[in-house]
Length: 188
Ligand code: IMP
Ligand code: MG
Image (cartoon, rainbow, N blue to C red):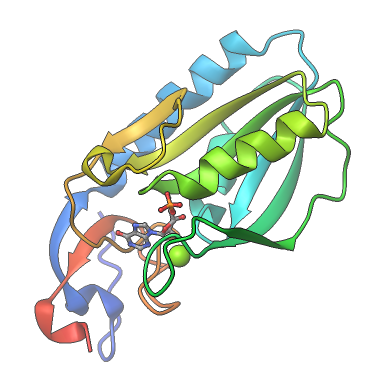
């Protein structure tokens, strides 16, 4: 296999442990894509990626969906964790296309408290979506505050802060091709 490593400043050097490898991600994406093909055959499907974390998963997943779809993106921010615990979610970038009467599949990087996704699901239904499903690369069930039904799950992870394959720490590490945990000295 081609060894792709930068000599200096390679972000892979900041990783303590790989939790989900490139090959495991590839397999999961294929499996989920095949399930979605089967489940939405004949449906009018809109696939919505949640920016920015879902970009890697979304890009790979849609190529494994072989039925006609439209794609769109939303950018949201949850104030569920951290300073406030109101569970308030703010939409920074909304959809360009209508979901009324259509099947919606939301693609997310990781479900943590569930606050973001339970909110988005409600928003889509209030806009008249026929049905709303969720595909997430990762889930941390131990952290859940809101119940949210997940239709397609890549991997369950324990309560560790993860990065890679779209997921960031302070906006970095999204471009790692796998999911891992940073070395303790990286967290400032
Ligand atoms: P929640 O489910 O509403 O708590 O929000 C999930 C969002 O929190 C994800 O889309 C990520 O942006 C962020 N998040 C949760 N866990 C992690 C993590 O381990 N690393 C990086 N971001 C995370
Ligand atoms: Mg984030």
